[in-house]
Image (cartoon, rainbow, N blue to C red; front, side, top):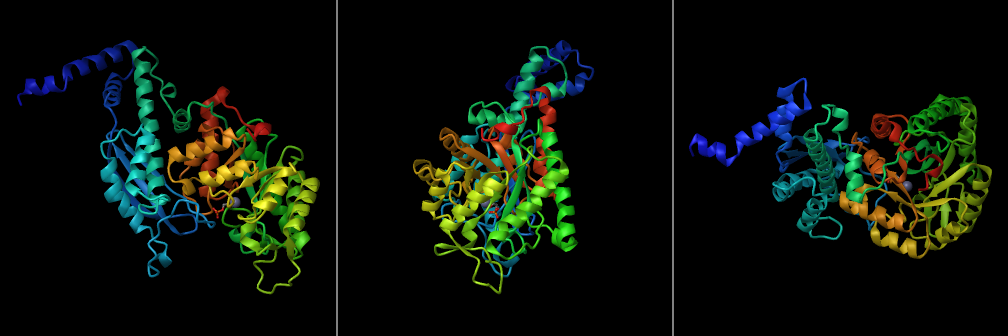
Length: 498
Ligand code: PGA
Ligand code: ZN
């Protein structure tokens, strides 16, 4: 090919001339940088490579991280993992070789990305999220993503979503330049949460109310508390930045309250960062004593009436037959700490009366539909389905039909792709349910769920305590988003149920 033929084939003279004209119109102070950006942005983005590796989550258990390369940049994502798992959720693929990471390695999932998924996605446009997700679902061919692994598929899906957002930034800024706009980066950004809102079908972004874990128990801590989490919700804040301050101050007051009552050793924290005090081992007192500590911390912080309380009972962990063993972690059981489901309904009723509890997650075993329905019908508080639903569309359908609960705990790794996550959120919202975007106990520093909660305007996010890096990364990303939105930022506050 001659030089002239090459120039003609790629229309180089015309493209360069357009870029120079755009720079002149924008009167940019740095025309060379402007022209190079302009040229780069006029190239359509395609996926060029997908490369995964095994990393560790916050518990030191292997998980998947992926770098998705396009001709514009590299976009990184990693996936979380949790304690609770069930037969309805997407399959987390683990190697099972007991000699390596005690069987928890994810080398197979990593290989699936580097070989099969990479090959299938190279050449695709990263803005076409649903096509990318469908390509992986088609490649997997199983109902629960067991062939490639939901951990492999979700990591790629999130990385593609980030790449798609970056590509939209390019289109937007190019249009802006052509209109003769300012060379001001602030005007050029189409952030991840906006891209997610577009994928959903344009909801107005809103900052969610954070549910900070302040006391940990259940499977998340080595204390004797059966209930998995006590959370605080700063619904009375006006902005997210204020909510973070209120939650963090209360967390520190709680540390002082626990130290005074039990000593410093009871301030050790559980997997999500909540304190793990050893409370009395008497069934009725289990909950009350822990809630009293939190109520006192809220009072000392000066936020009575501005902070409300949520529980994640995770009752599946201590349901034995038809009874609930509140002493399930104790090696020497007194045998006196069993409650019937009826007793539990009564206990929740009393606690909601005596404490500012506005939400209870998994109050009964995941198959105890009868009692969760009975409790929901009292209308005392939001009833969140986590283990009950496993973020599974069919379980959500059943719960909607049977009025079993009125909020979805959204664990994205139980779903497996961004497109399907958006679908289950639509399903829940159409039923006028609340939606709580959730972390897992095994987290990474990926803050995707923060952007997801804003982009889908879900109203609630649960990402652990206001401490520990992997938890804070989500809350700090929400701070950044609020700062970026400026006057446009809306914090859900009292409208947290959305
Ligand atoms: P998990 O817990 O990540 O251990 O499943 C989170 C939750 O139950 O909300
Ligand atoms: Zn839960």
